Image 1 (cartoon, rainbow, N blue to C red):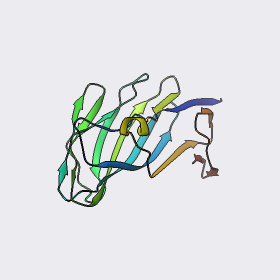
Image 2 (cartoon, one colour):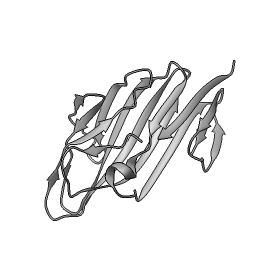
Image 3 (cartoon, rainbow, N blue to C red):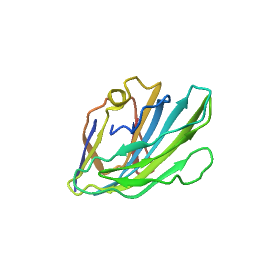
Image 4 (cartoon, helix red, strand yellow):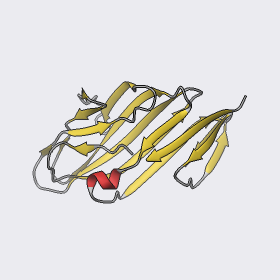
Amino acid sequence: LLQTVFASFLLAAPTFLHAQPIRFVRESLLFTLAADSFSFSGVYYFDNPGPTVVERSIYYPFVLSGSVPDSTSIVDVHTGKIVPMTTVSSGVSFAPVLQPFSTQAYRISFDQGAPKRLLEYILKTTAAWGQPLDRMTIRIQAPADILLKLISLKQDSIHSAGGMTTYT
């Protein structure tokens, strides 16, 4: 039985709800696919180039193509602490605190069904923030029996091991 997952990556980028003196500088995304669902884990890096502590609300939208994400969590990568979040509309908001002249990383994770075997993630980071990222990494892991029919971004490498295929 051939299973197909259609992946169209377009980033539902985190965006500020208020004006901010911080920069969204980097992201590292991991999609782990299954037959009719996927798990997502993204690490987002924010830089405070200024001399004062900054706390701002950030809205992280979800792409709702078929099902609502569940098991959503936001974790401060440096401390390992869970970050309080509020569910709003079709996303979540949280308020990171950035110390002066620092970079802070937050991991946003969730599981989402893909009953039509369609995974859509919208990449609009530079448009939402008005500046390019310093670095972006996307990895997709899928069981070897799931064939990715389309990925809108060209992958640099494909590796297979232990019954899994990883696209980077």
